[in-house]
Each structure stands twice: as C-alpha cells, then as structure tokens.
Length: 226
Image 1 (cartoon, rainbow, N blue to C red):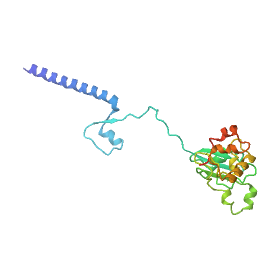
Image 2 (image 1 turned 90 degrees about the horizontal axis):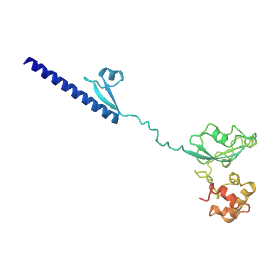
Image 3 (image 1 turned 120 degrees about the horizontal axis):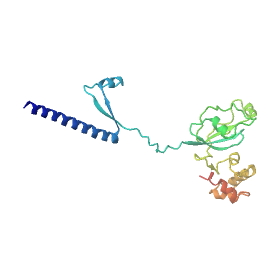
Image 4 (image 1 turned 45 degrees about the horizontal axis):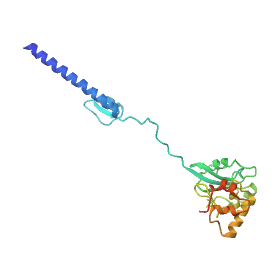
C-alpha cells in the first residue's frame, strides 16, 4: 500500500510539473506577441523606486518599443522674409521657422560695405512676411532717432505667406527681386499699375513692354494679384 501511495504522489508531482512547464511555454508564446516578460520581485521593485510592495513575485508585460522607423516626419515649418537695402542679393527668402535676422542676411549674401550692420538686432527672430531693410551708415547718421517706419522694421503686406509677391502692392525695389525684372521694368510695372488701377490677373503683366512669355514663365509662380 505504501508503495502505491508513493507512486500516486510521484505521479501527481510529475503532472503538476508538466502542467507548469506547459503554462510557461504558453506564456512565453504570448510574450512574443505582446511584449517582453519580466519577473519583478519585491526587492527589485524597491530598487527601481516603485511605490508598490508585493508579497509574491508578479508578472509585468513591457510593450515593445516601435523600432520600425517608418513613421513620416513632419515637414519643418518655414517663413518667408523680404531682405533688401544694403545686402548683396536683395530678395524674398524662405527660412526655417525659428531663424534669426542674421540668417536672413546670410541668405541674402551678407552685408555690403556701406551697410549699417548694427542697425538691426541680428539675434532677433524673424517673422513670416517680415521686411528687413538694411540701411546705409549715412542713412542712420541722418536719422539718429530711427529711420521712418516705412523704411525699416515693418511687416511687408506685399509678400504673401507663401513667398509670392503681390503685383498691386509691391514697390519697385521688391519687384526687382523677380527673375528678369530690372529697374526699368519694375518702374514700368508701377506706372502701369497706377495708370490702370491695378492688375486684374498675373497674365496682364505681359502688357508691359519687355515682359513677354519667356519672362512670364520665370515669374508666374512668384507673383499674385490677391
């Protein structure tokens, strides 16, 4: 009888061990799907700064981090600024949001020798549609209390947020930043605008002498009558 009881006990223990092994096998299979299995003891939890305490080891599931690397990054925001005056290449420039005035000046080729380099705070942030007019040393000397507002730190209404120039508001200096538009053609554009009460379409600019299909193709994406 004793031998039979021992056999029964041994059989029961083996069954329990087999069941436990099978359970762990299933748990590991599930862990491959939902995450990594981590056994945390009370001591380990205390070392990690956890507030909870546990009388028995417990099972926690850590979600796997996303390592696909296939997420599309958001396009960086940009701003358009109009840099003119005493710079090597006046024009409308697209800069990364958060850029400073010094970056706008660098985009325009840097200062000319005649520029009053200290007039602007070069560390200041630029704003979308901003007009940065760099004066000469002589202009600053003639206006010790600051240049007229229209010549200095104004936000140009003639430039849209996408960088297009508004034909009905741009001055001759701004118009000259367009490809193929020099001083004479810029003056003709302003004169035509004043005589006809403004442009009704961008194609109308070809009514001006010297501005035909070839020039229009270069500037049509850079101008608007809005």
